[in-house]
Image (cartoon, rainbow, N blue to C red; front, side, top):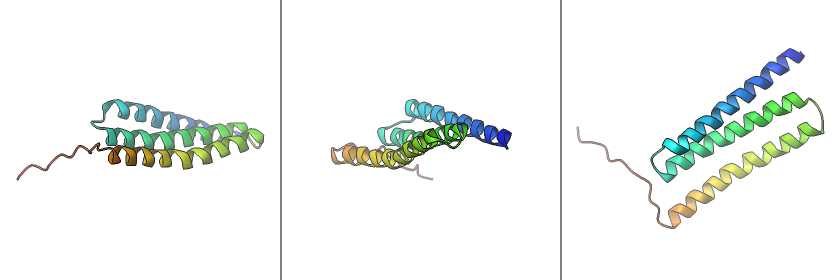
Length: 105
């Protein structure tokens, strides 16, 4: 049973790290503010969630696990909310999304 938990923990840690790295690359490569915010926000939430879940599995049943799960709960609420507030503020202050018109066929 301990081996299964260890494998699941490492799978969560590795997958979460991959999401975080892909999100960082997306922040550098995507073309405009809104696309960067979307790419970074989605992968940030999923990456941090998986990393915290993997750490919780490593910690076992303890106070550390409770604290990690509370951090996860806060991150799952705060990250999308802050992304929404940032996008709404940017749109309110006149930053328009980049729109590519479809070519005529």
